[in-house]
Length: 387
Image (cartoon, rainbow, N blue to C red; front, side, top):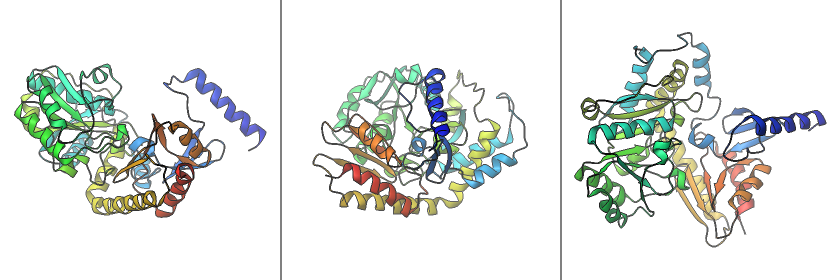
């Protein structure tokens, strides 16, 4: 890289620190392009993307149909929430047909946080209760309400956890249990079927709603269109965002049954930018793609998932390493005293983007990643993990 390019990158870093508020320093990657499973930065470097923007770009970056549809768009700049807008109905209908069980009524949101907030509003309005329960240390959004969820269930989520859950629910004060069916935000913790089915039954017993937070797990990430399908669950409310537009525009949704929606009143759900017209164009492509090609996409996920599993089985990993794989959601517990952030940095220097902290690594490649690219990324990862 020439001197001028180096100065440009240094200036970007300085300006980012000065003008952009963050909760942690930015990675030393100034992204300027992305296609498929490859990112390109301002220094001309390319990276294999094993993160998909944390489960946003499931269908691969620069998706040609999404880009073409957004570029062709000639509709209104904005659709007021108090009016009707035909693409909202198209999106809602496709989403209702795709989601499991009797979910039918969609509430518009802009982000995953807002989608979970809406679920909390619905649960509180329906039950008259103010308490909520989720898993200890799991993440469901950035708002004060979501971060203030008081009851936290400890891992592991197996049959023994049901007694802990019952103690929290038996007083009939909890409005909703909010869970990721596969917990991506805790390095892919996988609850047992006994726990998940028992939790739903227990919620029904004590008048508590079951909310499936599929913001990260939705749209094929775990090897099913929605992760709750692995357990045959029919949630009362389901939340999506991220891959709903393949990362091309901000958009979230909260979907519930007609029976719940028709019972609830006094909701404050005005979303100024919920389902912006441009975001709807991207979402319509994603939803149409999943309706048309779900079998093909899920077969691709199964094939790549087996590839990752086989490669990890072949690696000479240090004692104490635990690898969890569900579809293309992959979490790795590292041996004690291993610096996850150092591994992330070393992989980045070699051209691979992964995530890691607190002794754990998380990997979420695009569902469309090809075998050769996946192998190249796994080669880099193996060079940093193997003993």
